[in-house]
Image (cartoon, rainbow, N blue to C red):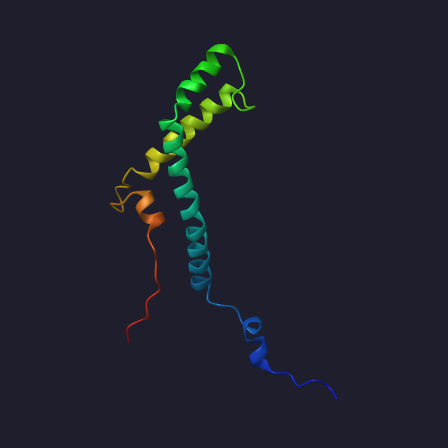
Length: 115
């Protein structure tokens, strides 16, 4: 006897979601993952600055020494990029009146369409 086909078991495989739903789901997944990275970045930036990493990098450049196994030039570039990234994240975008950080850290909850 052949098994009976039950469409309810395969509902998620029978049709696709509308493209706008797919994109919204993808955006929300990216934002969820990005929030943790942004929080980690902010904490790292504070640790970097409060523990004298800029002075250590400058000393490593002056003495042409590695810092934790990495070139002082790499450390310098990391510092510049992370600082500029934090600046960008905190700078309002005129067309939306919010900072990238405000948009990226906001919790977005889908709403029911009103009839």
